[in-house]
Structure formats: C-alpha cells, structure tokens
Length: 302
Image (cartoon, rainbow, N blue to C red):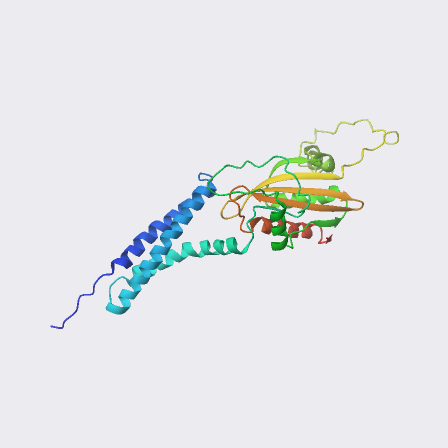
C-alpha cells in the first residue's frame, strides 16, 4: 500500500481568509452607511482606517500561508490567495488616497480667486470631530493652493452676465447640485427662462392643452416714458453637492461679474470635514469650468 503523507494545514492561511472577510465587510459597510447618510464622514474614515490596519495583518497572514505551502506543502493555498485579494481590495484605494494626501497640499478650501475669494452666502455647517481643521483664509494656505493647482483659475466669457448665468445654472442642474441661496439671480433670469405661463401658452398653441383657456389681454406697458432698470453686474449662487462614489459633501460658490462686454466667473469649493480634500475640490472646479466652456462654445479667456 503506497505511503501518502498527511499535509499539515496552515493556520495563518485560514485566519487570513476569516479576518479578510470581516475586514472587507467592515470597510464596505462603513462606506455604504456614509453614502446613505447614516454615518458621519469622520466615523467612516475611522472605520476604513481600522479596516486598513486589519488588511495589513491579513496580507501578512496570507504571505505566511504561501510560505508554509512552498516549504512544507501545508494546505491553505486557496485561503491565503483569497485573503490576499481581499486585503488588496482595501489597501489599493486607501493607498491611492494616502498618496494624494502626501503629494497634495493640506487644504480643504479651493478658490479661483486666491486674493479675494467669494464669500459664502450661508456659512457651511461644520461639525467638530477628531479630524483636524485649520483656517482656510490663511494666506499661506492660499499660496499652497496656487503652487499645487495653477490650472485652477477663473474664466472670462464674451457675453452678457445673464446669458452666462443661464449656462452656469444649466451645468449645475446637469450635475444635480442643490441650490442653497443666490444673490442677483432672479432679476437676471427674469424673462429668459420659460415660466409656467409660457409653457401653458406653448401647449395651447400646439393643441395639447384645453383650447378654452384663452390668454387674457393686458394693457401694453408705456416703454417710451419708462426708463428700464439696469441689470445687476454681479450674481452669486451657492450650491451643495456630494461626490459620486463616496458621497463626500462639498459646498460650492459661483460668482459672476460683468465687465463691459465680458463676464468673469469665479468659483469656490470646500469640504466640511477634515483638513485635506485629497484634490477633490480642485478637480470639481476644473471639471465644471470645462463643461461651462463647452456649453458656451468654448469661448473663454483668462
């Protein structure tokens, strides 16, 4: 009868898979609960950091499992491989975030105007947490932004402020941003955007509405004896948004200033938690202004 030696079982490989499942579930649930709004961002970050620490342990146990498999033929190759894959699923994104944390400046508020940044219409609600947070208005931090993000600058568009404002609101609507407050917007868009009454009139003319609803004649305004009110040369809109995957809240401020026959657009974006935005705010500004260039036929200057 042939002799078949009994292969030992690697305990490290078995524990790498068990601990890996718990670690992966912890990280996934933390991100899922934060995305759903049930878990604050600082708590989610703490859970992910704990999962990353466990991932390092899982990776070490899987390496021990592979070592035991190679030298003494211990069972557990599949378990060690599974633990290694689960550890890399957590360590990969965390490592990418850590690289941006080290490489990019420690700022959480980015503005296209580093000298006179647009001021918030409604101050963002900041909840104190274990994450540190410094003053964003410090000139030294604005200097760090200028060195790290030289491409984050305002845009000058050929056209009146009301037309540029319509394009700004259209891009914000496409990005599903929630408007918080505005200054000077209602006067500028009055008569430019379709109103419910205009929509009803268009429906009647196309035969989609009740023909019995006829328009009521109104007295013609005396244009010759009335001087038109000048349109404001400044408009400010504040929005709230969340990143697509992680759901990190961002506060957005857009300022439009009309200068002769051109309109200058400035932006300010800030995150609410922590002292580092990992470059998310600069990326949002760059993406928004690119979309605005396309909507305004790409006619922009510095």
